[in-house]
Length: 106
Image 1 (cartoon, one colour):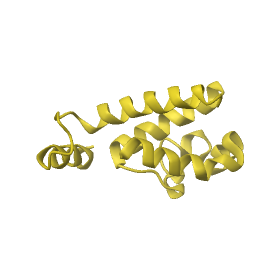
Image 2: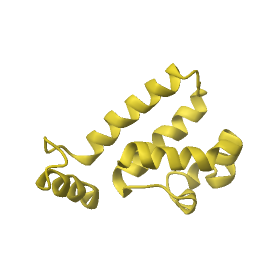
Image 3: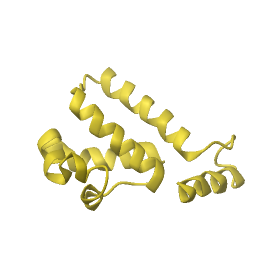
Image 4: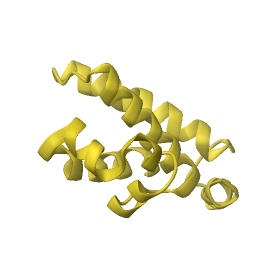
């Protein structure tokens, strides 16, 4: 979390952001916008998928990105890890992770 907030501080100092806000808040806002855009595009997520997406969001907020290897650790491992995530999202998982990294950590 500290590293993520340092990124916010640097972006503010470099005038890439007009307001100094915790990185976690920025990620939450971007996630809400991303979800709305997905729904506008007709993409629906199940309740289970949304729980996973929220965990991915929180991971990105604290670690700046998510990789497949991260599913070996808490909280993902407690939910069944990569195997369960693949079951929940199917072939979309890799593309979804890439999309979320880009949309949330921009």
